[in-house]
Length: 342
Ligand code: NAD
Image (cartoon, rainbow, N blue to C red; front, side):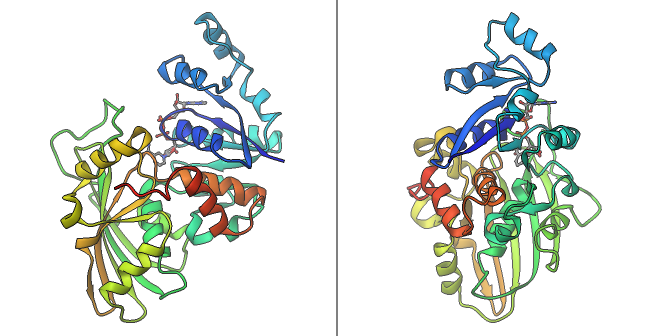
């Protein structure tokens, strides 16, 4: 029996989750909820996705534009086991009671407040805690990047503290109205940034402080991360651990010539749909080890890093796969993440 999935909100995250669901042999995409008539709606139809709309009024607008609609969100909720809410931050909370009425399991995104769901989620860190829950929140892109690097060390050595500076991209490529366009903005000016708090929704005991700035670029975020470990490790140990960890790629600048987000994205353009890089990209030559302290730069492709986590979250809450590493492996091979970028 395949898990029946609906996606509410067909933007940057929703369209990628919907596509990823169609690649799973244990899931079926029943339909997607689209709010506006636009190119994404046309493409959804062209891909064979069934379109649903938030309300009957929206259905009229779609039908007047000649687009076939299969019903409202409520009609979709009658047919699914899980709804993935990929509406803009804060809107998911407004839908929570509607989802509850139809008794469907819920996956929310990182723009929602943590209390929208029973648990905040990252596949490597706390898959087991999400098993059979009624709702989960997949944390945001930056938080996912931080959790991936922290939980890579699980089972090898304890991470005692984390200090990170997050250099955030200003906007996604399609977001023409966001800035800054000529500043490096402290975001926020008063330290710390909220990212540490968000990491602690998954790892409550962790000693972590984060700062953030926002810069005029759209391609990806960069983090400078300092991890203090419970025992001395060599640089080679760190590299071996990261090489063995799923969803982390090491970028060797000497071999590839890649020294930043532009080079990384350019490489992905040739081999990945939409130039997505759902893996965390760690710049190998930036790794410095000083006793118990490890420092490195890592890049986060904000539009795609949370997509595999959404697929694992569906498996965890429905209990169709109890083992995190089996789910991760299944998700990654179905999405082509086990193939190297170069
Ligand atoms: P988006 O604006 O690209 O997409 C949201 C979609 O929801 C749009 O298509 C919009 O038309 C639709 N929508 C708006 N109101 C709706 C409603 N009432 N009912 C149904 N659909 C509605 O946003 P996004 O970037 O995909 O973000 C979605 C969630 O994912 C947010 O919580 C965000 O914080 C989180 N997230 C975004 C990124 C990113 O970089 N874009 C990364 C990680 C997590």
